[in-house]
Image 1 (cartoon, helix red, strand yellow):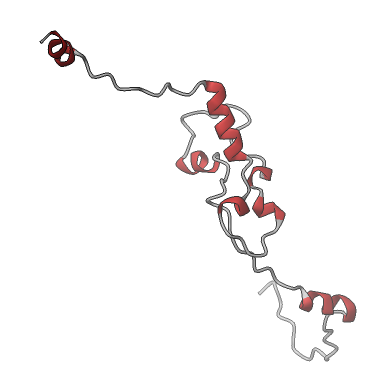
Image 2 (tube, rainbow, N blue to C red):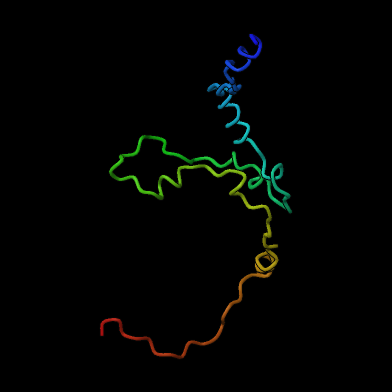
Amino acid sequence: MAAQATESTKAVVTEVEPEPSSSELETDSNSEALQRTSEVYHTDNLPERFDCPHWFQGYGAQKQQNPVFKTSSSSYGSIPPSVHEMPIMYKGKNRSFTEHLGKCGMYRNNSLNTGMDKDKRM
């Protein structure tokens, strides 16, 4: 009977995971920031600048912005891109037209201008 009484009076204790420390949070955010797009998504012909979003610099204000003049677009633009916002495919142009113009030169119009010039003062 004593065994039954102690079992019924025992409190149910659930294990709670400890909250991560600030150093663990920094490590998680750094590992996410240094993550490559090709590690998360299957990429096709992706240049290095899109595969490494942590290369993009200049996000966030360098100095504290006046809250009166802060807009929603400036708050949105202050967030650096993550691998989820980067493109997974790159279809760049081949520059054949520009290379041809560089070799041959631009078209030159050698026709005779027979039209009357308009007087700008009238």
